[in-house]
Length: 119
Image (cartoon, rainbow, N blue to C red; front, side, top):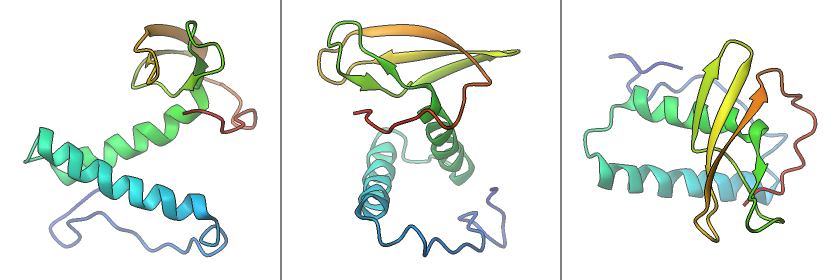
């Protein structure tokens, strides 16, 4: 997943046909385009490798969703993570009330518990 002179976007061969019928797949694709445009507004010279790393980090972070202490039912994905050995401390901000908090998890967080109700 690295951009190069021969492949400046870092694209690899893939086939997501088994997921492509899901509306969430296309909604996410469009959201990624909007995110790329928004990040370029913040940092016009954002290198492709940095962009790919941001997407990778975001994808890994979904396993560390946590509930906002103020909104109770609101769940957020961390916008920051500090990995120290076997633990991950996520930095969170509630998109509803603005509350910020941290939570520390085992880095071995099970990948199967995620029920997708963040945001």
